[in-house]
Image (cartoon, rainbow, N blue to C red):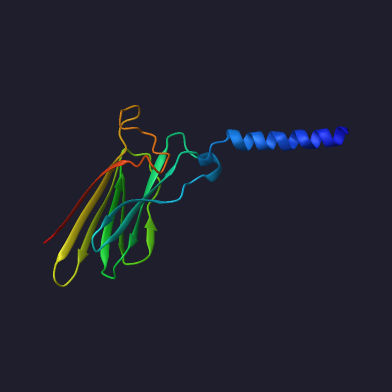
Length: 148
């Protein structure tokens, strides 16, 4: 009887722990969510990590839709990464920086296509909502696309 009570108490404690731990804590880095799409370039994704760091972090990614070679530049605070791709999906590092941006240049025979995507996570404690820890709370973003 004592063994059975101890086992059921342990199972109850484990079930209670699962109920009290938020889903983001158990999942860690969340699945990607669509932020926007760029004509002839691809889809821009975002994901968040609100568990592993004191300050929530956001990561941007790109999935190319065409075959044209595209140069992309990622900026977050002092970090700059440049990649040349057509390819599958490319993720940039998680960052707690307020601003992150992706700039694209795609040169083809008829024209050169430019695009710029910038996210603004807002100031901590601002009305914009700094905690982007749900799929329905994307960061504020702007998109510009043009040709020359």
